[in-house]
Image 1 (tube, rainbow, N blue to C red):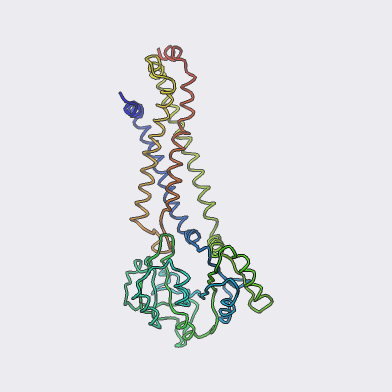
Image 2 (cartoon, helix red, strand yellow):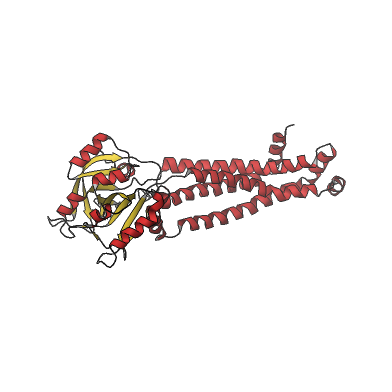
Amino acid sequence: MTYLSLILASLGRRKVRTIFTFLSILVAFFLFGYLAAIRSAFVGGVDVAGVDRMIMTDKVALINLLPESYRQKILATEGVADVAAATWFGGYYQEQRNFFAQFPVDSEAYLRIYPEMKLSDEERSQWLADRQGALLGRALADRFGWKKGDRIPITSGIWQNKEGTRTWDFNVSGIFDAEEGFDTSGMLFHYEYFDESRAFGDGLVGWYIIRIENAEELADVATRLDAQFANSPNETKTASEKEFLQGFANQIGDIGAIFTAIVAVVFFTLLLVVTNTMAQSVRERTGDLATMNILGFKRSSLVGLVLGESALLALVGGGLGLGIAWLAVTLGGDPTGGFLPSFFINPRDLIAGALIILGVGLLAGALPAWQTLGVKSVEALRRVV
């Protein structure tokens, strides 16, 4: 009889208890995987932020706009390689619940600064040539079923055009893809069209995206930039893109800390449940283990048998739980219908989950396995008899 058959036989002694323990592990790791995807959706942009990109905003508040004239001064600053402006449009499609992000941007510069955006040369040329052209992220296009050539009206809650309405019409020039983690749930359109057509705020932008020549000089370049606009009506605050996005995410809450706290509580409880299950199993089989020892099984083999039971239970339950979570995230997609821009399980979270599975299996079996070392075979048999 092999060790695997012995392990399976032991787990099958109390089928109901084993099944419930298995389901506890499965549910715990399903939650781990799904919560990891939610965390990635909120902070995924932080993970893919460019190390050579910075964001310049108004020093007082992000909602305060900056002069367009800053662009040339920024570009002339030592250490700056490129710059593009972007502004929050704040619109929705048909109904307010159909909200998504839209930004008027410096088209060519924006594409240079964000090489992560993948679109064909044809789409790029068509967008640059169409004054009312818009680029849609793949997630956004899939959300509404939009395709290249569609004309879509977007109603802004902030910006009124010179025709006296808040509804702006755009032509879908292209749909861009990107690496996993990059936000493809928004829309880009031309700043020139926006600036010429808006009823107020001419010559103002929301923020600047700045690419620098040497990422190691980021702090020095940021200091030089902010010093240029010190004591002006529009003082600035320049930070790395990662720092900016992290601060934006933290306005919702420290998602990483919340995730860690929930996972810690769930797995501590799970560890107690599995340890209790294994301890009961060992106590019930004291006589069997003693008999095996008398028949020639070494103590180390008995310890390995108990650890094997715990590890197998954790590996199968945890692996299946992670697998179901991955399928739910990959096939089910964003459960909010587009409000989470990049809903996926990061590979590093899958690796972390695998390590936790192994840890739970070994730790839960450690105490019961240690108990087998202290049981004397003759005394164990006498208690059973």
